[in-house]
Length: 190
Image 1 (cartoon, helix red, strand yellow):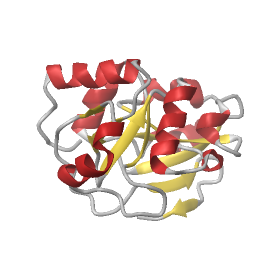
Image 2: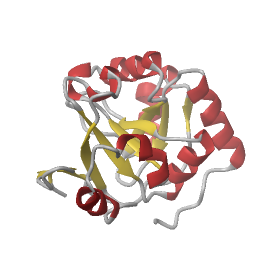
Image 3: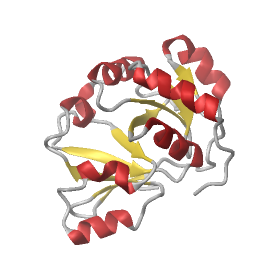
């Protein structure tokens, strides 16, 4: 886990209020600023996709503070696959797991879902304050470079966001590695 200052309880509460109102929030992650929302709110996810100008066919990543928050989506893994996944969390590893019952607005055109347990202390605090996992995607429009500065993020997305949770990036220079949980194949390396 990174040793960053945690967001204040007041700021976490403001972020949670925005999430409960089906709004999109921004927050610092390991490498770049992220956009997030309630994964169980189709309206919130559609708002996030519109902000990013991204089609829903690609699917989204779900982040969590710990494995327990992702438990509902890990049932399609056998014990060896699950052990392989759990050995990398928390950390910069996103795993594609079978999730045919997950809402289409999360999985896109796939029968799978991308999951990650974050090692970023602020992200963990946010997910714990929220009480569950969040949709998480880089703060940028499709095809553009993700924001690494809060000021630029505010200038571009500010009015469209329900809240911007202050904090520090985790210092990673690369996005998370993406692996298939069934085969172990690396789909995007670090």
